[in-house]
Structure formats: structure tokens, C-alpha cells
Image 1 (spheres, rainbow, N blue to C red):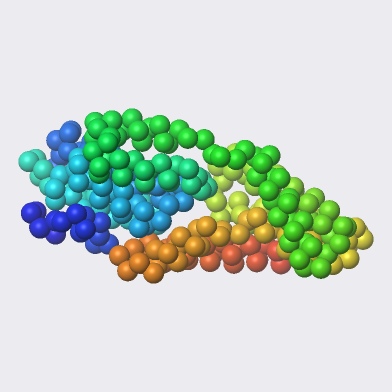
Image 2 (cartoon, rainbow, N blue to C red):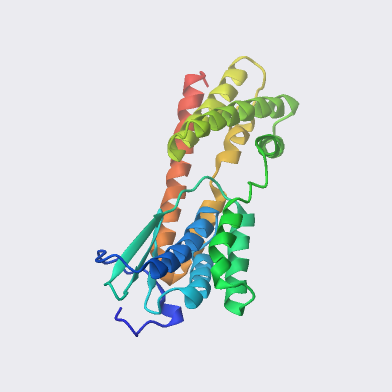
Length: 276
């Protein structure tokens, strides 16, 4: 897009970024980098492409060069702008470590406050630092407890009794333990999901073979239900239905579907290894 032809609604595009040229002035680079940080933080916290677009428009209109355009992809956000020293591009990766909707909401509120003039643009970097430091709302034990409760409910819905529910709880604990250990070792997310699902399924299959439970499905399926990427899949569909972010939606949806396939393969391998 040519300089002078950018409107607020056309700031966020799906057009591939052009190559970077000269180094921009520090002030303009920092302004674009700040806007990108807001988008990246919102997306990696579980926000949608539409939410990130609105935040970018609200913040960029106050601090970024008037011709700056921004692009979202599944694992990065990028910007292109011109400056007195020449055109330049910036790219920031999106590192997804799990959803934190409190952070995503805080970014959206920040965008609204910047747009309304309630927040001084000079304080945006500090506000982003504060939001990035917001801790996850639930600790490891709370997540395990939620997975256990969900596993018991799933087991009962599938016709299981007390023994199936208890086996589901034990298998869930095994899978969650493997997940935490692998995440601490910074293993790839797809590998973490696959190994955790296989471990939980193996534990359930061994329990069924040992006679702890009778209905294998009522123990093995609840043991991996907590691994299903529901939020990622929903966000992918939302972005897919908004034409402006179809590319982001396709990538998010495909990643979620790959996770579903990995979980299914892990269940098959775990059950087979456990003699189920």
C-alpha cells in the first residue's frame, strides 16, 4: 500500500511483508515495535485475530507512522512502514505457552483506553510490561484438580462407575505429570501433547488389563479429555469466518486438528502398548 493511502481500517492486512530496507529512526521503530508487542501478547494469550486487529488499530492510530501496516500469521506478527531513512519491516514471534484470557482482556482494555485518550501513549510500553507479568490464573495443582473433576464427569457420562472414575483420575495424574515435566524441559508443544496422551492412555489400559476397571473407554477417554485444544480450535474457526484473518484462522484450525490427530494416535499406541 502506498504512503498516504492507509486508513485505520486498512492498517491490518494479509499482504506478505516486503523486505526491510534502511534502519528506521529509533522513535518510529519503537512505536511500531510497541504495537507489534500488543498484538503478539494478545494472540499468544488466547485472543482472536479480530481482537488483535482492533488493539493494533487503536494503539497504532496514536503512536505508529500513519502508513504502517500490520500482518498476522500463526506464529508471528509483522509490520511494514516508511520513515525518513527509508522503508522498514519488523517481525515478532508469537510464543504460545497456554491461554491467559486475563492478559488478552487487559490488552483489549489497554487499546480502548489508548483510543479514548485515557492512557498516555508514552506509558504503553510500561503497561505492556505490566500485562506480560500477569501470572497464569491457575497453578499446576488447580489445573490438575480441574482435569480430575472433568475426568470423573466424562467417565460417568460414558457409563463408567466408581472404579472407572478412579482409574481415569490416576491416568489423568500420570498424563499431567508427564506434561509438566516435558514443559519444564521446554519440549515442543506437539510432542508434549502426544507423549502426555500416550502416557495417560497407557496407564488407563494397564489398569483395565489389571482388572481395576471394566469399561476401558470410560477410563481412557476421560484421561486425555483435558488435552483437547478447544480454545485454539474455537479461535481458529472465529478467525476463519472473518475474511480478513482467514489465513490466521486456517493455520490455527489446522494446528488444532493436528493436535486432535496426535491425541488419537497417542490413544491407539497407549492402549495397544497396555494390552488393551
